[in-house]
Length: 551
Image (tube, rainbow, N blue to C red; front, side, top):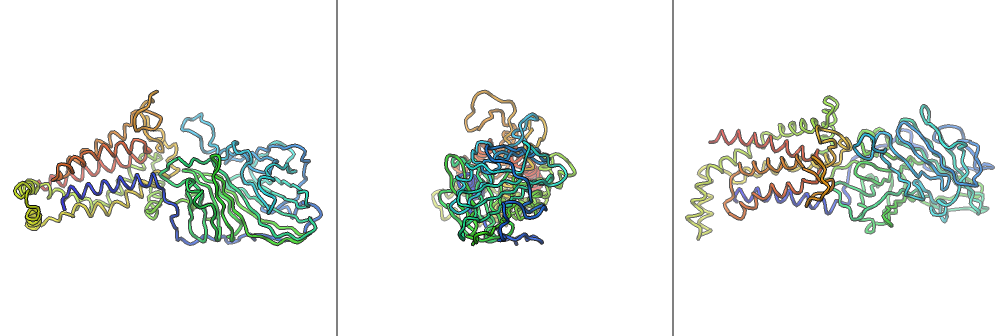
């Protein structure tokens, strides 16, 4: 096999991999790591005799506490201020209808608004519940009594709770209590159903999450519904919501994911249930439905949940102790990508610049793969020395393909050259390249992380200057993609240093590959381009040293 064909195949495979992953993101990557268990899990549901009123069990964090309830003639909004976020609760539906994170901003500008994780455009709010025939739509329009007498609360030293209560016409009382913590993105949600209807009930309880959806949007990472189901990670892209509207199994948590942030519902302990997913009016609705529970007249049932609204940071998610870190999945090469993420963050703890951390990480990876690269470039150097003889054979036997192949293989044998010698080491390195590619694209650490000069956000494409006009193949903002252009030049230099393909058509295709990759990378994040650029520069140096040795 000709060396040119080998490199063309590798380059085209890489191109196909990128385009395929962009157009058709994977649906359900399985994860087989053991589930994390909590040492002191709370009971999933408690059925108890009902008190005279929908008041309280005992005053301790994590349980519904006794609080005075104000009248519910008009809906009220209560602002919750913690060091981690600012949230707004509405007594209409007892839902969370706005949240912004204090540690993140919408854009890289220093005066940019805080990152809005729960937008006010959801009129029904988040953390809606439903109980049997009392649907989320009904509850979202109902005004709850609340324990909050003011318009805001400060959560600074100790957790604080807000109680909401609503009496249905049929004698069922629904109580929702939120507990906020000063040092966590976790919000405790305790739900109690009090049955004073005069008859026994057997109904299911459900909790709902929503996010803005764009079925036409293509993303290199995962965006949509994820769940830890039967101890495996189940993922359904938002564009596939109609294909898989219902999933059942042992639910450990359910989440709606964006590129860098997520919202999740975690039952107090794993429970059999089903996940309902639908997309309508550019909103993705996900509902966790628990099994039916029997509730006698005069009894009450309590169900506890943990809500998470925050960043997709591996360290932060691990610290919750709820297994949410398993939502961080970097595709088929996840087993390599996570160690790379740890190394990058470790470097950053010493050198607080993620651009430099990416450069050092790339150098470390190239150092580990140096022997493979050396073997590949040695084979290429030998092939380059043999090129005149190969051309002579092709010209001499151009009308006899069989004889041409025989003479070519004889030449390889004489010079003890394996035509696949330059290919196999490169194939071994492909998983490493893709693992780094996926990690650098999805790592929230790179969001709004500056490098130097005009590169103020390693998660965004690099643009020197901003032009008021559009540029073909470029997504806004429009400007000069300096890093990408330099990367294209390095790919062209690498191509010039490689043995030319024997077939003129293949040679032209190989020379066009740097242009194709430059166009593809023009909209990639600058962190990705930086990695590829540094990798190319080191490869050029290594290839040059090997070729000088064999001249």
